[in-house]
Image: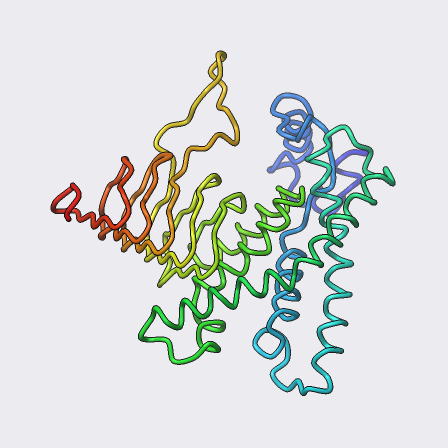
Length: 310
C-alpha cells in the first residue's frame, strides 16, 4: 500500500513538499536491510517501559501498602489490597517476562508454549522471593534512618529519598536477573536511573543495610560486589578500569571487572573506584578520590594524601 493510500489527506496537502513516499520507502530499506539493528535481525515484541513502571509501583504497593498503595488501608482491608494488587501485577509481569525471554532465547517462537511456561515459572519464583526482598529493603531503610541525621522517619525515607527508590528497583530487578530475565531487570533499573540519576546494574551483588545518601550520579557496574552496611554518597562510581577482549578483539561479556566493597565501608561524594580491586572492611574512601588499587581493612583514603593513612 502506498503512502497516498495510507494517508491521502496528508499526501495531498503536504506530500509533494515532504516527499513522504520516498522517505518512507528509504526508511523501510534502512530499517529492514541496510541498517537493521533488530535482535538477530527479527521483528519481535519488546517489553514495555510504561507497563514495567506500573508493575514496579504495584509491587512497591504490595511491599509497603500504606506508603505506595493507599494511605487509608486498615487492618481489615490491607491483606485484601495486597492480594488483589499482587494478582494484577504478577499477571502483567508474566507477559513482560515472556517478551524479555525472546532475547534470551532468540530462536524461540513467540507463540511457543514452553516460553509461556518459563515466563510463568520465573514469575512464580520471583513472587516467592517478595518476603525476602522486603526484609532486605527494611534493612536498607533502617540503615538510612540510622545513617542520616536529617531523616525524621522511615516514612520520609520511603517517600522522599531517591536512593531508596533506586534500591527498591534494584532489589526487584536483581531477583529477576538471577532468575533468568536479564533484559527485564535492566529495564527496571533504567527506569529508576531516569527517575533518580542513580545507575545500578541489576547484576551487581549488594548485601543488606545498603544506604545511598543524596545519590545523584551514583554508578554501580554489573560485576560489583558490595557487602553489608555499606554507605555511598552522590556521584560515586564503582566502575571498570579496562575491558578484556578475546582474540578477535571482541569484548568479553560478564567478566569480573568492577570493585569488591567489603562490609562497613563508607565512600564519600565524587569518589571513583575502578577495576576488580577490593576495598577492605571498615575502610573510608574520601571525596573525589581516584582509586585503582586494593586497600586493606580499616584504610582511610583521602584525595590529598593519595595513599594509605594509618
